[in-house]
Amino acid sequence: MTAVHPDRTELSVVIPMYNEEDVLPALVGRLRPVLDGTGASYEVVAVDDGSADKTAALLEDLRAHWPQLRIIRLRRNSGHQAALTAGLHSALGDYVASIDADLQDPPEKIPEMLDLARAQQLDIVYGVRTDRSTDTGFKRRTAGAYYWLVRRMVGKNVPSHAGDFRLLSREAVDALKTLPDQQQVYRLLVPWLGFPSGQVTYTRDERAAGETKYPLRKMVRLAIDSITSFSAAPLRLATWLGVVSFFTCLAMLVFTLTTYALGNTVPGWTSLFTAMLFLGGVQLICFGLLGEYIGRIYTAVQQRPTYFIAGDSGRGPAQAVVDVTAAAPAADGGERVPEPRPRSGQLPPA
Image (cartoon, rainbow, N blue to C red; front, top):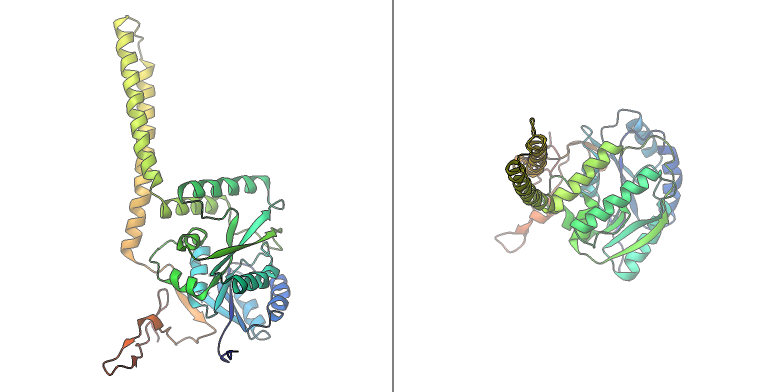
């Protein structure tokens, strides 16, 4: 049997956090016994996404009694997907699980995911929600519409009702790190990789404490990001709207000429006003869709990091992250050690 290196981390659990002081005690009370019971060497990567409450202070207190807890602090609130990116890029485990702090996704499923990935040689294990009765009717309907829409536009390889609760192998994480996407939507990026995958089902619970960090505004933004990041279908929709408006206006032209020939013209000519409103609406929709894609091109050209790390308790404040993929053969045939350079989203060492 192959010996395990003493410094090897078998499992990383990434948890993006934003103003989660109310739920932290319950999270630790459930997560730590589960991870201790796996018998694997692990780390918990808590990414503080610029919290304005006592989340950072509570994490520091917890770390004093939980050596496997690793705290990454972002300099500002960068958003859930950016915080998740920071955690995935910093995780050291052979397998990396991601879970939200609200305990709606049960941490007790993580060992089951790990066992399934090992037994079937899987690179991805999705947590799929089979029962969402604890969500409001509006939330269930909008979630169903979201997954229906992205599966129609992106492809049927996107699992229905699979959020950001998943397990990834080191190979899958490394593949994600090579992608240049500025606005990463992992529930679509991960299936796009095409790695061998499996599923673990569970019942979605109510939020243990605190308030939801995904109001309607952010849900709409996520849906727009999902569609425009993975499909040109909205641009084709703009084309079809133009075709429909052309034939509609052609029909109205025939109607106008016919009415004029019959002498039934009416002062004010309501149809002209209707045509102007219709064409104006179609044009605004098309311009909006074009603007969304042009905005993405502008963001990609800027190449600004989506997050900046202010501190990482696992590395120290002045230690840069070495990109081991940059190692190249030296002139003498040996391996040349790359110069330390900051990873995307990290500041150079002081």
